[in-house]
Image 1 (cartoon, helix red, strand yellow):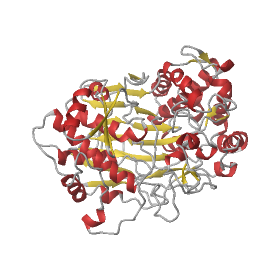
Image 2: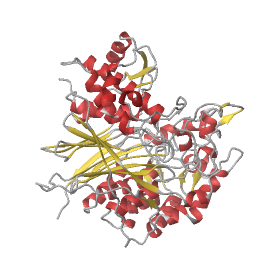
Image 3: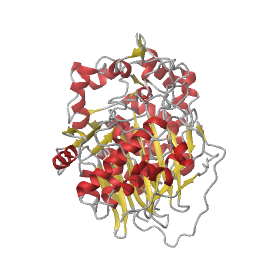
Image 4: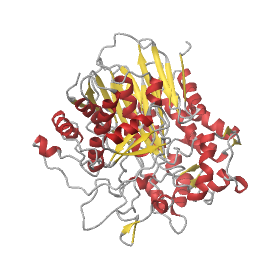
Amino acid sequence: MRFPAAILSLAILAACSDPADPTAPLTSVPDDTADTPAPAQSNAWSLGYMAAVANPDATDAAVQMLAQGGHAVDAAIAAHAVLGLVEPESSGLGGGGFMVVYEQTTQGVRFLDGRETAPGGATPDMFMRDGQPGGFLDAWQSGNAIGVPGAVALYKLAHDNYGKLPWATLFEPAIRLASDGFVVTEKMAGYLPQMAQISQLDENPGAAGYFYPDGEPLQAGTLLRNPEYARTLQRVADEGPSAFYEGEIAQAMAAAAQAGDNGGTMTVNDISEYRAVERAAICGTWRLLNICSATPPSSGAMQIMITNLYDQLVPENPTQEQQIKAFVDAQRLAYADRDYYFGDPDHVTVPVQQLLDPEYLQYRSENPAAPDATPQHGNPADILGIGTAQVWAPDSTLEPAGTTHLSIIDSEGNAVSATMTVESAFGSGRWAAGFLLNNEMTDFARDYYADQPEAANMIRPGARPRSSMSPTIILDDNNELFMVTGSPGGNSIPAYTAKSILGIVDWGMSVDDAVGFPNIIARGDTVRVEINREPGQAQADYLRNEGYDVQESDGENSGLHVILVTDEGLVGAADPRREGTVSAGFVVQ
């Protein structure tokens, strides 16, 4: 049967810091938040804990925290500190990310934003050359690409609100691995030869010697130590975030960003002023479920858009081909609206609630773009008769497929969905204090013409670039935990994540099958279909026959990590396209 578009609701939740913590908070919480009521819980959580993370060492770090009775946030911080060491091509201390957190006792969902910010010296035209957009490779490797890192401040904001274990404990696994050594994986090693051809990773001070000892790329299986990273983490563990955002480490980051002929403007003052923030989580009903994700600058709202548009587009008793077509058309509509309207909500007005309004979604589903046409954004003001839509320039954002994702449920039923990034592979390639700095500023629209309207995602000093990262937690009709999901993958993240939801809930798949199912990404003029996984080739042929411009892909860069709550227990899956693992257990009393 077809389901009506959702009646949506926002749950805005307050932060609660721990004034007894001796480490400096370096966080910011909005003043207009309020705790949601805490409904009575009929049953205590009895399903144990589970972590699905992108690297076995990082999964082990999460489990070490969970086995001690740590909160899911404790486990997420410990896991990500390890990921920054063993998976530096995807995320790290020099980047940022988003956390969506579910608290079992209150059944509340909160969104913590650790997205990087543009330095004060950033300008809208800083990637333009002679009046035209410069090449992406030049922008990627420049100091202008570096935003102020948010990961460590995000750690602190999350730990202040939820942490159960001591702050310093969270960094012990990563410090130990950095000091004693870890085994270089196929994934990291596989990038390095190509990076030497297209980037300056093999030339930049610090990075060159670390990734290319004796001028040769690291080989998989090599035991690699990073004592500099261990020292940085030890200082953060001992002194708190101030050790990162002030003093020697901040000076090293600013110097790396400013170095060379293509240096940027990031200063120690920009770094010291960084704050992670709490924003309203966005929650919207779909069928009997409540999908909760991150608001802008995240694209998490697209999960609510895609699923509800899908229900309007799919016919009764559909074939698998009809389900796929509805999924494609839902994506095309949602991406068009996201691309046009989403930016940093502290700098532009993003009409999220209007874009998710049931009447607007129904109108959009009744007017999908023809398969051979370019999908256009809608105007909710015209449909709903409220407000006036801002006129923005067409979006020109290019968001490469980097990033990492982790999904965690602790022994009390609390959950974290966290997506973290340094943007492109190995970020900017610039090294400071044992880690790589991001190239997050290339996530802004890099085209700028003074005589034309601004883009919603235009570069603005202090702004956070729009992100496709969509960490998502789904609740059942009793507001109890049902699913934790999310993925890396640049602009494809909303499609990857939505596939996991539809696959499990609508297409009757197991968690493993939904994660492994061919990825289909429908943004703009083309529909990209992963054909090296069955039945990808058949889907590509069907969509091409339907009139879509199909681009066949031999492999996608998803890294879905999903946990499903069932009556029998927790069921998790790690994307077979990457190196993630799933581990579970019970706290021994």
